[in-house]
Image 1 (cartoon, rainbow, N blue to C red):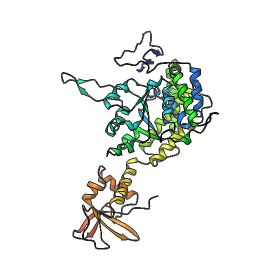
Image 2: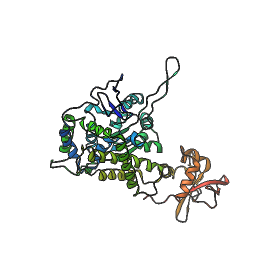
Image 3: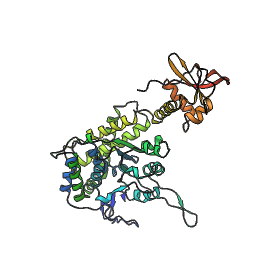
Image 4: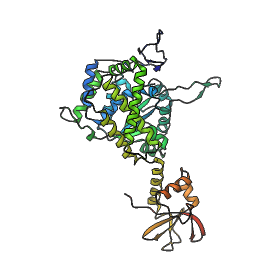
Length: 438
């Protein structure tokens, strides 16, 4: 599936010229219905018209056209997750995006193992893989799948003679939905999300208020029902029309896609000039959606002329950024959150009170506490700081983050300071003072 030179290969058709060769798709996998067509393109455009003015629906449509631009622009793969309560339009957005390429079979569920996802991913090479209901997948599988799908390579396995079998590879975007996000899903299983996973699967919050335009229909439910009905009747034509546009002049399409990609990446980042590398990577993926939507609207003519692609992508990017907690490094924010949580949970039980000269009742002590300058100092013993308070992070980085945030009291160049402690004498420790919780 996908690009072969300047030709784009689908199971039953190819777009572009193959220099006198005939290209055919051959696979042992069943692809019946995955890229099927039904109804008409004009009929499908009625669904696209209902997405106008609704940022999440418009964004999902733009992503549907973005897969073929990955190779043309050299952009890395990755995913987006539409996150929110039930009946807020998440699944409707997925079905609308799926109808660009095929029928209901194009929407799959997360109820699969990572091994099964490899074969599914290969069938969506240079396209969009749509996975509904993230709540159906186990946390461990999700943690691995976030890396695997974005990195574009399956596991390396041994064959019958112990020789390495060729692993499957792909290049794709994936769009997911669920009531919980990546971090919350992993927390359910006692796992902590990593910055690399959060970069590869960016969560976009969705709520009923994001259905802003009803287009004459009585309510959001009626709009959703109409979209699903149209998407189930007319599908598969818009993606092929988009490919025909790209392959008429691939070099021209590449140049225009790159121009739009750079333009929109810069535009999105104007709101956060101090963005770290993680934010810049995700911003580029959002910008690819903008580039695809604009090409589908202005060049291929499959999206409505009055569809404000820029508004939708910008709104979704800002929502992701706000949900993330800003443009700084996410691991730094995670360190601060973990330290605050530890002290909130154990401040009275695992820190010996020096003001009352407490001598008993502290089980598994990690340090001491006392009042100083109207604030409570938490004096954390070095080994406890490493093994419990900031576990799973580098203790050096954690100390540097706490110091930069003004949470760490120091009297010299080092992040630790010497204190006279009951029973222990003068020892080096970390002195933390929590700021007010904003």
